[in-house]
Length: 183
Image (tube, rainbow, N blue to C red; front, top):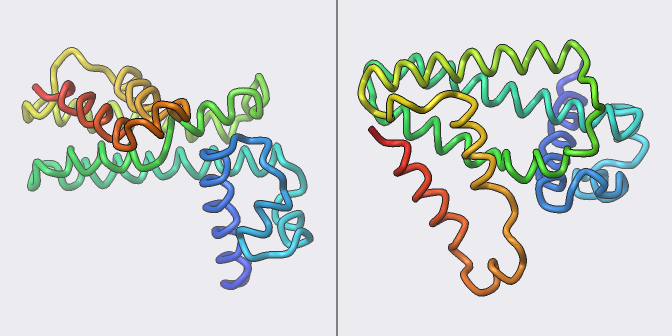
């Protein structure tokens, strides 16, 4: 794939993820194309249908978790702050908003490509979590599923009334949750 075409595809994926997190997986394909600064034809040349785009955003997000876990593992021995950076990266991925958006958009049976990346991701998260436990950076009774589920729950969109009344509430709740992970 040409460099410019690859950059457009990456822009579409990044924009789609942001829009899915903000508005749900049923956001109009026209809106995704417009916000990506591409024509609708370019969007459909890259992703023939919405399920294909949703799947690719899912794989890309899982790959980002996997990359973050690998980086944390590499740096954790020399830099204990690598654990906090890893958690911050997971929070920035808007896992809660995406899981809510994809609840009905992903097929009931995931294809092998998604399942493979999902398994690799779970293993990598568990490895970095065990390393953090060994360095007494995180409570010993926390497991990988609980970690990712808690971050997902804390990053789910809040009802508008809460957001309007207390604009920093979600950030505060995330920080309380992250503090609760500490050893």
